Image 1 (cartoon, rainbow, N blue to C red):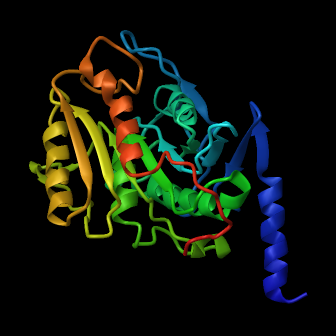
Image 2: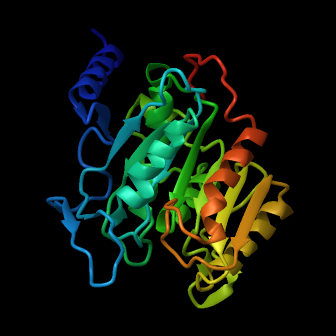
Length: 306
């Protein structure tokens, strides 16, 4: 057996051994060993109890072993599109139900397979808190394409949706996909990590810390930035104005985009219904996806885009 064949056997064995089932849904470790850049163990993973006055949300932290949970679309509805879902939480916690599992179930109702990303928190690098999560997101997108045929998804209709910090991570994944965040480990890392579309919802950290009316230098839009749908509220601190700065940059590069700014709603509402018009954003997003043909059923192939 040559070295390449042996490596393939080891990789296949790792993929089998690291796939387990929770609530009948596949859970897949992102990395074959320790995640890149980890200098000391983190964990065990735990739930953060809510503070007085906080809404009921499952908050996870001390995530040292990032993973994917696959919410396959029902077979009678599946259209072949998939979305990587990134919960928010300031890069310190993950709002696991509000901005994760509930969103995955909504996507399933549209016939879309949801791939729920459990990325590393809390912040590893105070100056670049997004760095380890971006490594996880790039690896997750590549893994999704690697498993496209197995999961019944089209590798050319793989998007990313995130909330707050997860929305920031979504934008970084869509604007820095051509900048490898980690050294390649195996054949999976030869696949593309470019999302085919972006859905950042009330994204955070889009402005420069000392110049809030200037788009962050971390966000590098170009003509290959994916089509984007954004929803946010005007009363969400400076975030709506910063989302508008992002929209201007998308327009400058002729990237198709929609920005919906609602008057009230604050931050962190997920897709839970309320009396406020911002609760309409999931329906608007569905309509946007239909315009792009993302909710049309298409036969899936085994091709893996590089």
